[in-house]
Image (cartoon, one colour):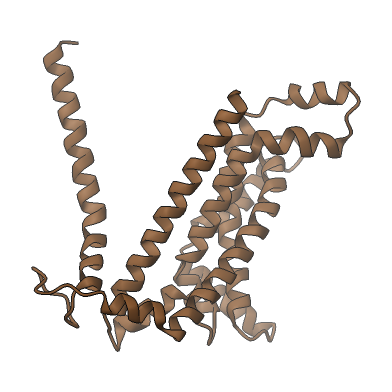
Length: 267
């Protein structure tokens, strides 16, 4: 391939990448500008910038309650989904047993359900059981949809797992618990960590399932939607920008941790 062709390909790749970044991040930038605008409604170009709406958002007791509720749901979903998905991923990708193919299909099935349909079905189920919808039922709904995702993420790492490492440890007299703690978990830790990040972010930003199953309890996505429908305030883009920046920071932190794990493993 000639240098001219390589330059054209590189130029095309950079142009396409830039276009994708503009399409993805331009709406986020507009939201950030709306939260920094002094006016109540967003106008471009922004005539005057102010941090008033950001300070009101931080000082709001209502928003503090929303954040606590969303954090509680996301934390519970992250812990439970990682534990269940870890053992589920081993059964999914590691062991060969009767009914494995059916299990793989059933585990991944909730991912392909539209979330509003799944949320409505869960709401009807909770009502049939006489369970009052709250943030607890929202956590259950999130788990039903997120556990398959985390299982798939961890299973990708399990597929590359070398069984001979565990067999060597067993030949040296190590117990199953010791092998799980000192061999299996450290090797699968990058996949587990990635699954935990997926679980937290998917739960934190989930709107359809929370809308149907959270009842009177409100989460950050529900509040943002309600204020966009009626009673708009610039605190909406301010809170949305804060949530986006927090998610980005969490992803960067996750990347740093994964790099540290890889360097430690190589050392």
